[in-house]
Length: 294
Image 1: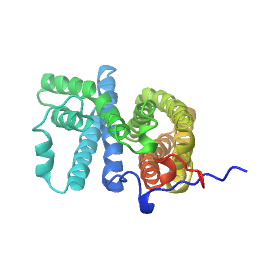
Image 2 (image 1 turned 120 degrees about the vertical axis):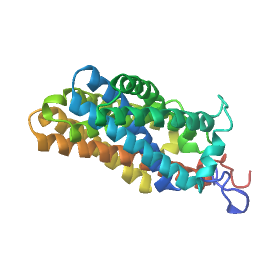
Image 3 (image 1 turned 30 degrees about the horizontal axis):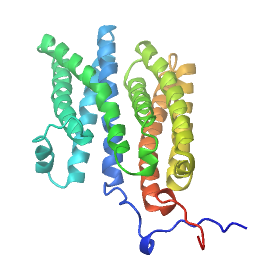
Image 4 (image 1 turned 120 degrees about the horizontal axis):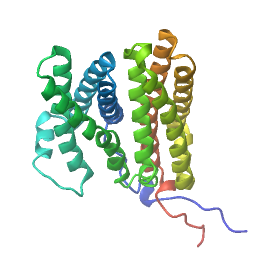
């Protein structure tokens, strides 16, 4: 009989350091950045398609989301000066450096777009700012996945190919949910379609990520992470179905579907964050098993 494999490490200590980031701050930063970035794309599309109420609401939503996102990041860093110091370096090979510059460029664009929409002043400058925020939005929505996957955390790094797709689809679901909440039913057809596509895309990408992770996918299915990710799937699918079937006729149904989509996106980000922490803390996912007596 071959002895059963045991997963051990020196003195029982973790092989790698678990993320030192606070879950509330950084998982919240992941969610809010995705909502802001995808929301700017929705705002630009609504402006082009002459849906003024949706465009204005989404611009304000994106500004609020990116402001809260930056606040969460600064809170995790400890003091505002540390974020300013991150802008002293421009390093294309560093997701952290690129993300800092991306956030620094996107924030003013989103702010100018929202201010112009609310006040009605400087419409040409507002249109330029809207376009700029929309161009930067997809990168803002997905770069946090690259940032996480660039670490040694098994549950993140092992899914480095699929994680950006999961985050982008989740951000799209969140933005479509926000659009369903703030837009009148006569203007929400694009949001309803986006919700269905985002729900399907997130489901496919998450399944692909779990297949690639192999044994490490246990961290996506068990414990706190498993509970959150199951809730995310249920909320996202239910929100997309509600929006598609009744969101165009009923304002309450649209709001209900939108809130479910937003909740699903929150659970996705916090669930993946929890899976990463669990995988870093368990030697089973970070060491090669040793045979007893071998």
